[in-house]
Structures are given as structure tokens and as C-alpha cells.
Length: 331
Image (tube, rainbow, N blue to C red; front, side, top):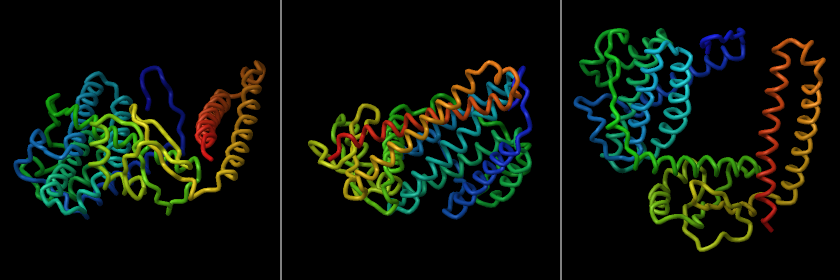
């Protein structure tokens, strides 16, 4: 985290957070092992057929280029941040999740390609991360050495070649397809969470308005969307029925009919109460920060903590207000 002209105070919470990052990477490696993700001799990342695999290879290429540039310029904090986001938010949170239906599916070719891609990406991750986390990455490199090990994987990770991934690996069509799926699942999850839809509820995901290409992607990706968003099906409809919560992703209007699973009046009351509580918290903190005497006398970390708390409360309040607005049009 420590960049030029920036001092970082030691934080137990941050250390615990990065321990969790190490655990996340370890678990991703275990996931690959348990699902037969092993290196394939002659693996060509430019010849992949499955959009999900073309997408993650492109993301890896973009990250590799950015990390290399940051390290060349001694931007170690920037390199660490880029790797953290790619490993946690892209590979672990989305690629692994979206790959599960392929790894458990009946399409043998898609499964084999996904197994080889997941192992190849993991090697790229370990190599890029090695200068920053040498001990964990070296251990994971050794743990996976026997799984289809190629000549490039023999020996210590510290002697491995640095990834050279070009722009030709970035597939714009695959990127657009997977980004649409991620946006639909992310926004759908937000709707479920904001409105307290029970985890066991399985509403349908309705496509109300979308381009032909978007409809094709969403319908074709129904198995993975159903699994990750916990919906019963993906359907194209003329209009959203009563009791459906609409939301927009990349210009497409989707909807979740959740009225059968929640008490609408109780949810409106709950959201209004939480918004009022957050508004009072924002107002109280804003008054404190507007007090010049407090800002001048309080330790810098206390002032910063109050600013962070107010920003978090404002963001939470805006999110709940959007959820309440969604409910306003539901009968």
C-alpha cells in the first residue's frame, strides 16, 4: 500500500484482511485440484472456444501488462492493488463461480478446456504474485507441481519465466458477453439482498427489454445465471408482471418477481426506518466534521475514521433509497 509520499499506519484489521486474501488464493487452488484442473501440454490460450475462458485469459493479459508496467516503474503499491483485484474480484469471485456449471456439466470438450484454462490462469497468478507474496506462491507452485506439470513448471517458481501476454488475447466479444452476465447476477443479487428475499426463494429472471444479442446471451447462459443468482429460470416477457422488481443492466431491463416471497408493507417500513437511522448518523457525523475545533484538535486518524464512516453511511443510505424506490411501484 505504501506509495510515494504516503505513510501507512500499521493496521491489525488490514493484516487480517490480507490473511483472508491468502486463504482465498489457497482455497481457489484447492478448488482447481478438486475439479481436475490440471495443466495441458501444448495449451494455447489464443485457441479457446468457450467465452468464459476467452474472457478470463483476456483479463489475465490486461492485468499482466499493467502489473509489469507498475513494477518497471517501481509502483509496488499499484502492482499489489492490481493483483489483489484480479485474483479476488475477477478470478475467485467470478471465474471460479461461473466455471462451476461447466465443470459439472455434460459438455466434455467445454469441461476439459475449462480445466486446462483454470490451471493455466492459476500459474499466471502465482508467477505475477510471487515478487509480492513469495512464500505462499512458492508453496502453492510446489503443491500443484505434479498435476500435468509442463517443462515450464519444473523447479522453483522463482526461476519461472515472467508471463508475456499480448493484446491479441483480449477478446472484446467474450468480454461483452461475460460482463453482461456478471452485471445481471450482481444487480439481481443486490435486489435480493436489499429486499430481504429469502435465500431459498427461486423467482424467475425476466428479460423485459433487451437487444437481440443481449437476449441471446442471457438465454444461452441460463444454467449459470440460475445457479449463481438462485433463480428458477430465465424468460423473455412482454412486460413485467405485478410484484416484479425491475432493474437495468447495460441498457437491458430485467425483473425479479419477488412479491410472493416477501411482505411488501413490512419491507417498505424496514427500509424507511433504516434510511432514517442512516440519515441521522450522516447528519451527526457531518456536524462533527464541520466543527473546526474538532478537526484541529482530534488525532488525524480519528478525523479520517469519521470521514470514512460518513461516506459509508451515505453510500448505504443511497442504496436503501434506491431499493425503496423500486418497491414504490410494486403493488
